[in-house]
Image 1 (cartoon, protein in one colour):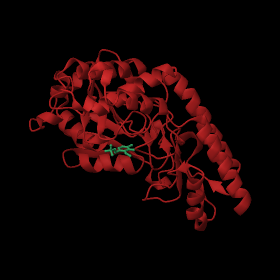
Image 2: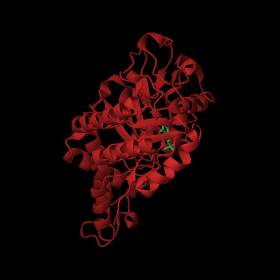
Image 3: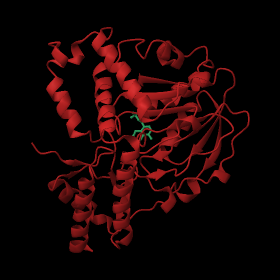
Length: 359
Ligand code: PMP
């Protein structure tokens, strides 16, 4: 068996140990004689898997009892509408920071329900940086301020948590669990699972309990945070197998030393790749240094005619999924938690060789 070095932005690399454990437990989960996919979600085994996964996420991010941890379906995209539905029942003002494609998608969907105001935008820089605190203007009577701490496509990550006079809502799909986080600064955090957590389709939501009583009356029950929390995320049949996979990743993270250890490794991986790109005259990264993502590293070749060859040769040596997002082109290496340091070293070596041949 050969595992590729997988730089996909999502669904992304999962830890090999996690996949192996899932494989071992596939046909006979803990002596039950069946797979998790075949079990009732009301049974003790699935309930335990679900509760343990929530507790492990709570431990990993030191989430206080002021918050509910729930999981839902529809990916992070479904949250673009669930957030306004659940929070704008009393007043419909929502403010947004626009740092690129994912913030724009959130803004667009919220605009169907909300009186939206753009608190800050970095459009004039071509979305190559995060705004400074002083650039963010939030209405005092907004219900929340939404931002995207890590723009997966642009490779732009905030190096700080914005101060906000109103609850802060964050789309952490592509950087949750990549380093320590002060959850207490947030009203709501959400993250699609398929980058640092598990299989696609599932989204984790960490929501402050005092925000659970302001949903619009028309919010569908299955989209209600309050009802989902009250029903332990099992208002209907949950995606049990995906929850189980997330749980295995949480356990794996704990054995790796948690988010503090992950943060150090991620800093090292990103620094090595950015340093290489910066000293090269052949490769370039457009993002301001203080806004560079630890997780998603976009880069271009000086001569874009060589893009296809670069990708083909990379694939041939097992460095996979390096093409940039279809909307922007170029290259992108996503180096999430489960992408090992040696994958980054192999990529750098390959890039150096490619530059020697073509530079
Ligand atoms: N937000 C961000 C920051 C993302 O990177 C993505 C997926 N790439 C999404 C939202 C959408 O996630 P999903 O496909 O799970 O709806």
